[in-house]
Image (cartoon, rainbow, N blue to C red; front, side, top):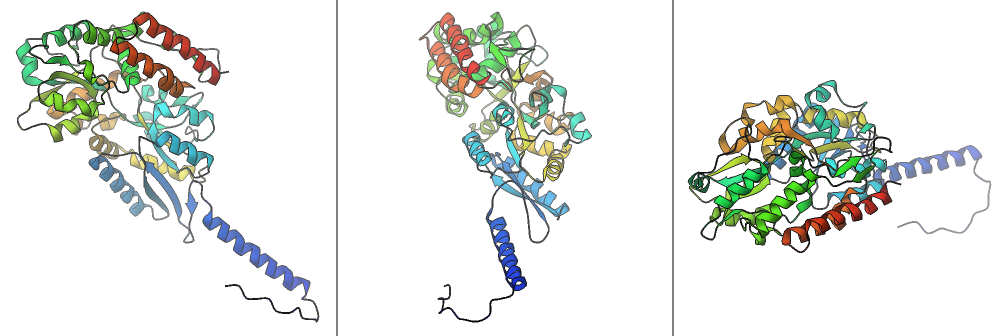
Amino acid sequence: MPRRRGPRRSGPRRSAPRTAAVAALVLALLAALLGGCSGGAGGGAGDGRIRLRFQSLAWQKESVAANKELVAQWNAAHPEVQVQYVQGSWSSVHDQLLTSFEGGEAPDVIHDASDDLADFAYAGYLADLRPLLSDRLKEDIPDRSWQSVTIGTGIYGVPFLQEPRVLIANTALLHASGVRIPTPEAPWSWAEFRAAAARLTADGRYGVAWPLKDPVSATLNLGVSAGGRLFTREPDGPAGKAVLRWGAGDAVVPQTIHDQVDTDHSASRATLGMGGSDTLPGFFAGKHAMVPLGFSYRQQIVSQAPPGFAWQVLPAPAGADGPVQGVSPQTLSIARDSPYKKEAAAFIDFLLRPAGMVRLACGDWMLPTGARALADPALRTPEWGWATGAALAAGLRPAPAQSVRGYPEWKDKVATPALQEYYSGAIDLAALERRLVGDGNRVLARYQR
């Protein structure tokens, strides 16, 4: 409690030098107090150490453990630069990061996905990594992966994990049907896939279950193999400017899914509103012979499949462009406001050494982007489809909407409801095109003036 002031005493005034010294001391104490309470990226400590915050979105048990162990290894080897592990969540990361950027509280090292970086980069929240990246990292990760994080003339993330979409098939039903078994070297065409699903449909069983609760990324990324290029860059326009144009290749995937549901009845209408995990009980029960899923879903299948259940990984169907598809790699970025960008970049380089990248890939059941990590024997075994996934890595391309300003709004307000209505049979293909392109270009125009 502050002391009560007594009556004012008469007498000589304090000397000016002493008064100035006291005032300086008070100001110094206030500055130290305010500095200790202030937020923002990065921070020093009274012991002279640099403190970095690393926000990770790892969620699988093995992945969280791998991230924390790598952080512990860094901290043990770098006592002068200590990293604090902060747990984030994929379900809320965009809004959480936006709030933290605007409030000056962003973590130094940021785990996200490449298709979420554009708005943050254009707003000036992320550091351009070009002067910070090591030669080793630049050479190890292929150009096609760097393209996914190149926004304008800058690089705003390090792509390190990627996930192709594959077909998970019931082995017994697949072989009993007599259909040709596709391989990465000879995948099914989209027409063959439709025919195979029809042959696998019998006795109350569907040939395929499409989990399309989030239909946009699946439709666009798989459509790349058929020549789908819905987003077209304007070569003479400003960075990030794109327009939507509908071509024949853009119709292949949505029309295949629509016809499987509404014409062939080889795909379950009930699964259209499901997430990938929701389809697994029916898959295990033999209600669906195949399920198109992201590569990482194999972890759930391994842990949840009933004893003796045989399954295998097949490549996704391919079009005229071969077994290619779009992906949005997971990324590591650095906050522009971080005072320790060089130290943050050194930590990222440490985390993504080949051995570390393999650990992170195995923990998340995904593929690394780095060439040396991808060549590791642990990712080339036929067990659980690792070899099939690794063989698809060369065909992975940046998702069609990478770095397009306004994409999140187009996806949420235009594309998602339009595709859901088309797949359910509520609208036809012409109406789908009008919605995706006509309404979509009006959304993009507001962001790209």
